[in-house]
Image (cartoon, rainbow, N blue to C red; front, side, top):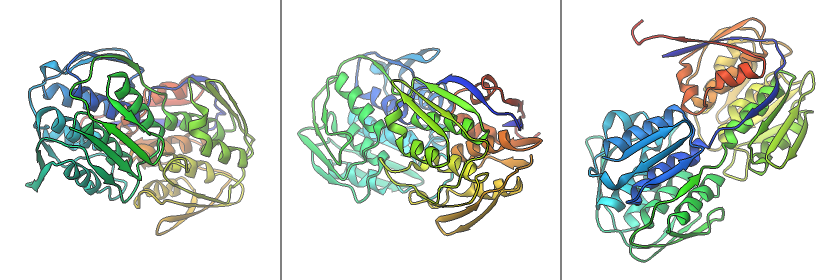
Length: 421
């Protein structure tokens, strides 16, 4: 278990580079099981979630070699279709392996996935899609057991779920015939998955639109692929500058993928400059409230940046309203921010935030990945010292975030504590 001690009060300034995308890397790692040749992946973030996924792949028999942010996955030696309970229980994205393991072995046995407790995230859309592809599925004893020879089909998603879209894409790549996914999610990470699959010789088109079409092929081939930059990390680091009244530039970024946040930052009074491969935010001494924000599937405002924007609005001049439409339990950071002097009220899925001029350091808990990042932002603004308990949850998605903060002039001290201490 990790704790962070953050000293606030300094305006952060400087230039940092963004890591590879967590939400692109995880389904791409799952996809390596489809290719019985070595795969080289570049710009793969060194974070808890990707390391957990690599441990799962090793448990299935894959060979993995990593050097910094580059790694080689060789699934030729994969020989097991039963996902380990302990590892899969820690990682929501282990569900992606259902489609690829089933496609590879004709069977898959997995526990229900874990991950952050941010609300109900049913996997019925995943299972319904796999059943449409001719999979036989039973759920018993806390496990999901799939079997069958997959065939193409038309899958209509009742909701544009990112995970279900990606899982069905993976399952369909080697299925006989053509699969069409309707009402597919349109997130950039799905486009990155498509680009990777096409680089491996699979036939996928339409990612980034509501209709994705996959023509099944028997076998793909090895490739070298660079994972896209992480848009949520990009946004979080820009918000580091915004909340502290600083001046932060993020390089290696794709500005178009964070447009909804850039618009909010402009409304807050920040000067936003987007150039090819970089985004800069120069913040006023105190931001303005932005009125109304609601999270939506892409290209709407991302739920994964809602907690961090919430932290910024907590110190803005005026009152802001934030509605969370994706996850019903994604306001757990609100009560932690109140410990620091923030003023907010939660009414079902809507938060009413009255900005305050000052926050004070406190002992708070990171209940989930993005909520933990929001507390780090608030701690950097607050007077005094903030202690964040369970900061290892932040490390699920941010590569050395404490070092990035230090590079920008902030102060974070890490304290490791064994369970039971």
